[in-house]
Image 1: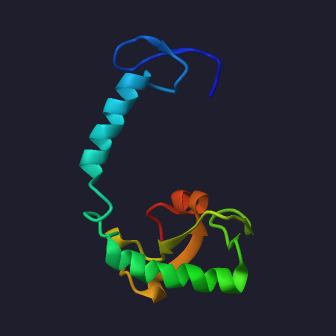
Image 2: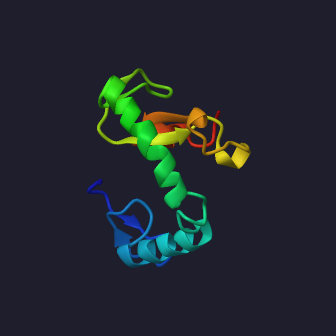
Length: 114
């Protein structure tokens, strides 16, 4: 975080946060979470957990803590996640054949692209 102070987008109080004071950031995040829905509501409940676990385990057996990268070269990463090759929002399924393993950073970078 920067030492530079900025006005909160909602109340104008100076803060070191990027856009909102702590109170308004918490309110904004709670609104975003309600709009987005829970993991189960988005299709990432217990069935998803049972599908992704063996995919991650197989990846770790073969490659260890290694991310193949998305938009960046392959790199070591301990925060591996299962990612949909074809995103669910574009008709992708939860089958192991539609899952790849990326670190959280690459998964975020990929977001909703195929």
